[in-house]
Image 1 (cartoon, one colour):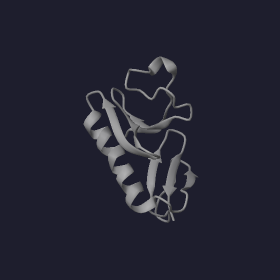
Image 2: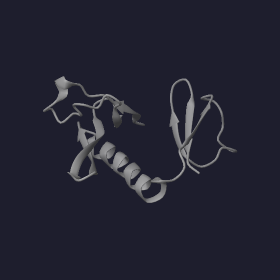
Image 3: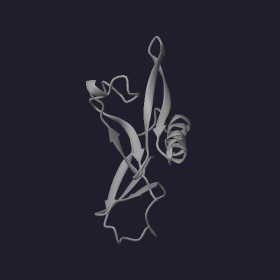
Image 4: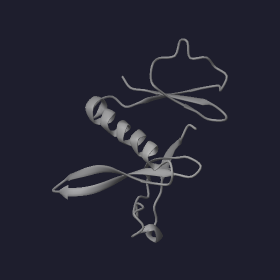
Length: 116
């Protein structure tokens, strides 16, 4: 099953539950029918933060691995680089001429995210 990617928004009510308490803009997350993984940020002193992944549910290891991989790719290849380009295609469109990138298939469209 392909996970769903999105943003998890925390509220004051989620404080203490290992959910992002004051994340009004949301944090990157992915989920399946019974599991959830999201990015967590821990101050390291000064202006730095450590990026980690918190995951729950039977599929937590797979979802955590997906987010961890995305963070590592961003750190090694995209940090300080160009912003992503997001292209939207019909669900029945072929990818023969599409550039390489991250493809997210939704019921109503295919989203292709590329950098560069």
